[in-house]
Amino acid sequence: MEVRGEAVATILRDQAGWCRRLDSPLYAALLERAADDALAGGPTVEVLSDGSEAREDGDGALALRFMAAVHRLVLGGRAPELAAFYPSTGGSALSVDQVWLAFRDTLKANAPELRDLVAKPCQTNEAGRSAALLGGFLTVARDTGLPLRIVEIGASAGLNLRWDRFHYRAGDRSWGDPSSPVRLEDVYEGDHLPPFEVEAAVAERIGCDLDPIDPTSDEGALALRSSLWADQVRRFRILEGALEVARAVPVTVERADAAEWLSDRLGQPATGMATVVFHSVAMFHATQEARNRILSTFQEAGARATADAPLAWLRMEGGYSYALLRLTPHEVWLTTWPGGEERRLATAGAHGKPVRWRV
Image 1: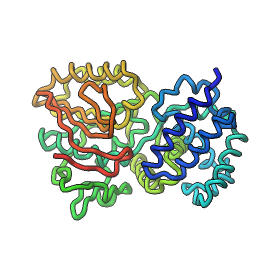
Image 2 (image 1 turned 90 degrees about the horizontal axis):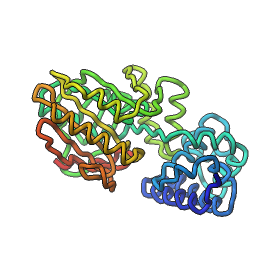
Image 3 (image 1 turned 60 degrees about the vertical axis):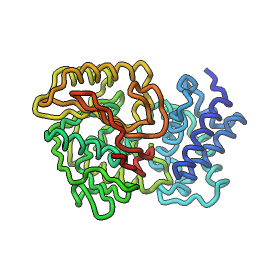
Image 4 (image 1 turned 30 degrees about the vertical axis):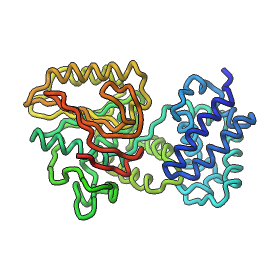
């Protein structure tokens, strides 16, 4: 099926705007040039020509997969001319014209392989989002006084399932292991902070994903690094620390459909633990049918929750109503059962920073 160059260009240009707003001038510039190239029928269209049109849903996932595919070649030593301009490999993009020429040459030289890579699902496992989720976990621990059973849907490599092994700091206050290789510092803004004084014990951690990644493998680590934006060095530091934590804290992420898997895991209340189901920027990739099934699962499981086996639903997504029908800026919400109380805890950046605690 032939891809419409104009449709592809629109998606690439929209994502360029987001990259500019999210402090990635390199990706913003390259996506703008790639959009122009798509309109001109250049190698961008060739790379995005096999089955990509069916996934052109306007949400930027196509553009993210496109940039991740090229970045993978760079990180693998397959595109040395382009690597000279990518900060992730020690390069510096001094000239947009120069980096675009190297990028375009990479597309031309590797089009068949890049087409295959673009078909892979978007797998950005952003450990920095744990800074936004932390307050929700601590709130549940404080309110229930129970150890936590942590359940993540859309877990990717499960990096955020190890959130309790990271270190968080805001001014002179902190939470977590100060020797952790993941240090989320100066992330919080505003006058309020999460309840850092609360201790939390994780009794169990499990997750699922349609296409899970093993972060302890070379292939898995490369896939995760590829999804980061090449000029955002801070995110690379966080990821490298999270990969180290993953090697020390084993977690199994099962290959499964989230709605079916979650229904099985919540079928019986877990007595003596507070079950916290969480996700971060996962609904971005889910169909409305899947969202509705997940919501129904929560409603049914919530009705079975008790004080000895409470349930919490923690999510960092585009702001949306309880029914997950409306996506806007990123917000952190917490719903707890028994009772079904719903609270907006915080707002956050797409990659976690900055977090503004609301309660």
